[in-house]
Amino acid sequence: MAPPARAVINLAPQHKFKGLKDWPEAQLLLLMPRVLWNRTRIYVPHFEAVHLAGRFGADPGDFEWEVLTEPQGFKWWRRTVGGEPAYSSFIVAPDVSTDPVEVFGMVDIASDTPWWFDAIDDMVRIEMRGDVHARQYNLTDHQGKVFVSLRDEYGPRKLVTTPKDENGVAWRVGAPEEVEKLKESFVNLVNRARTATLPDETVKNKTGELKPGTGQLKPATGSLQKPSTGQLPKPATGTIRKPPTGSLPPDQKKPEKPATGSLRDALSNLLKPKTDQLKKDD
Image 1 (cartoon, rainbow, N blue to C red):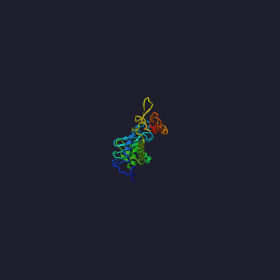
Image 2 (image 1 turned 90 degrees about the vertical axis):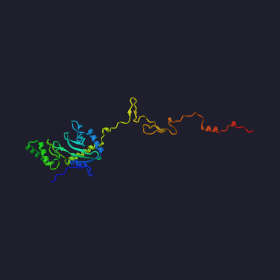
Image 3 (image 1 turned 45 degrees about the vertical axis):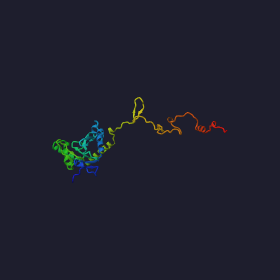
Image 4 (image 1 turned 180 degrees about the vertical axis):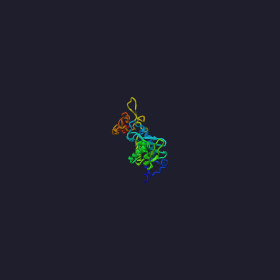
């Protein structure tokens, strides 16, 4: 029976990932707009970095990330039931000069972390064989179970990436369920970063400053503008109060001339013959 293929989730199946040749062990493939990638990198240190958690731990999904600088990426520190962070996976973008950016993720679990045995289907068998191996070679129970898991589980399934080093620590990639967890966690992180207000995006109040001692607001534009000719300022109710029909506003009334009589009287006087200048016929 052939071993199952390594679990891979490709969120951009139509795209040919050029960086995959340098990251053949990647299990999560996706494309991101470069501006969103950069925004998430700014978001994490202020809101969800693992070092922000207090000594009482955090809820799942809080304070579980660390920013990587070279190459650019993130570490995911999954929290245990007790609230302690344990390294689990990483996200990396080898080339951030493109737009969109190629992003790769891989579940990367060490044998001395709480997640090492999560991908084993029959843990009872591993425990029994591990105990026997530990007694035979004078090892701890944990060391015996790690040896048996490498030999009987992860090795045949081609999940081992690095065998035991000088410290006795081995590394493996993730099972399908673990890759799905990585995908959900990173997608949720990006969505939170997309909708959050970053510190440099805080908008100052532009309604004006309060002048000391005056009790009046100073408009942001400087000075008040006079209303245009023929219009009155809008009252507080939001409606324009029209002046009475046939009259001008007080500030626009023309100065009154001295009373000289009505126009009718002036015309009458002009057209009336001047009888005192007419001569009688001889």
